[in-house]
Amino acid sequence: MENEKKEPKKMEFTIIKNNPTDGHKGFGIGSLSLENISPLFIDVLEKTAEVDIGGMHARSAVERGVKFTMNREDSDGEGRKPYWLVWVTIEQTEQGAYYAGVTACEMVVNKAKRRGYKVLADHVNKMDKSMKRKIIIDEMDTPSKIILRDYLIGFNEEMWNLSSDELHEALNIVE
Image (spheres, rainbow, N blue to C red):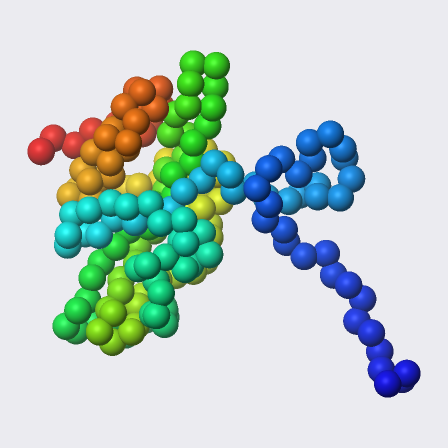
């Protein structure tokens, strides 16, 4: 045992709740705060939207019990359901809170086959873009955009009113 080499400890990526640099400039610089971002799942067939915090770690009710691949055909067949995972970031200003970043990622789940389709890199990148206050929802179909818009307005109309013109234009859909 004495001859075994010990691997040096590596600095790992850290996700914490509050501001990691509050009051000091030491350990924690570069850590990521996920306090103001939420995963919103849109069920395209059921026309519903629901926040599931489990989605932060791919443990939402939609994702549980499903093996995901990057092959769409794996989730085809009876029981196939399309979803959108929408990352919603909220920012606080003197006027009040608003929807600052909104990005959408495609996902297909087949609970009967316990298989699903998603591109994990896309999900991570879109979460990052949302946190950077970007609006990226152009890939979404029109009915899903309507569900998203109605959910955001219904959740907090004041936040919707304070949100950017870019978000309003992206979700300005004539029904």
